[in-house]
Image 1 (cartoon, rainbow, N blue to C red):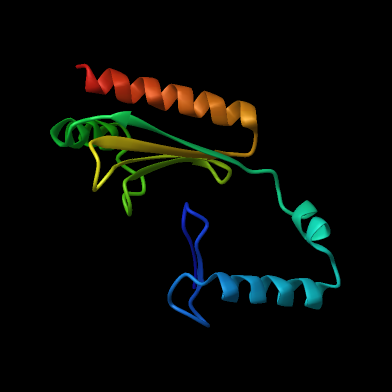
Image 2 (image 1 turned 135 degrees about the vertical axis):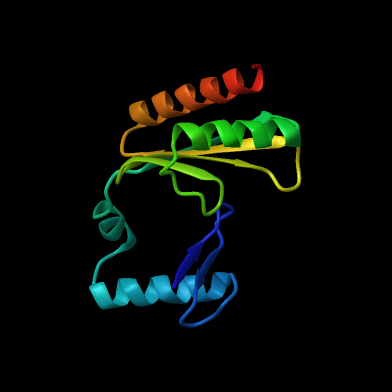
Length: 133
């Protein structure tokens, strides 16, 4: 089991069930030693991936309404931690209300910066439209 957090935290359940920077470093060094590659070589093997996030001020009751509208529009979306709309393996948007602030958070990932910007623009506009209806 692997776990990553937006703030850079990493957890590898086989060794430790909490975020641990020292364990992360040890596992990275083990990977590099066993592969006989340097960090640049390992990073070069990864596919391109671009991520971003944004937020929109939103009262809790408005956030609930927006989430209902999104779910009605995307009934097959992943709802584990918000509403995640997956377009293909490399492009998705996730919308979730904050549990501590009056905002809706929007996250996106894409295989190109151009697609990423287009996804964010589309979903920010969609949420603002839902907000003002």
